[in-house]
Image (spheres, rainbow, N blue to C red):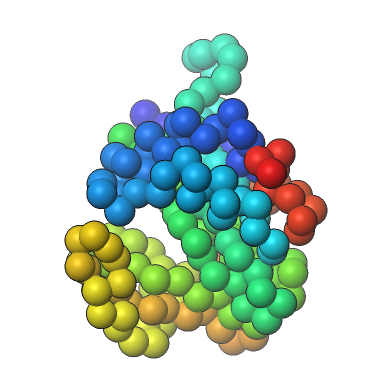
Length: 182
């Protein structure tokens, strides 16, 4: 069982594991290697991974979660967030989301936007706990599954101190690079 994770910038060496998790979590709608590489090369992107801090094992641990943002100069958009099913319900997603919100504040975004499948109750519940509100529905947003998505927004001016209480060390990377994944 995972009790603590460490967040750090996503690196090229993480691609295989992130793509494995993508396939496991999102099936036919998962990002491909090319899609991930293109995404990370985009301006204003910021991507992180979570790896367990285990005292009972030496060496690198497999990535158990990942998340990314795009900042357009006004708002941030959560591009993806995923947690290994074996690590879900242990606070990993909350720590990743906390880091995304903190990063959004750091770049002085006015709000954080995201899309979430309308049938993903655990994620919707977590986002609401962070203060996100549903703006509307995007019909058939998730392809090829033809699934609708809620568009959700967190107003950072209103939610100045309403973030989850999970302490997190937010990894810093310059705005023009996503770890060393460029």
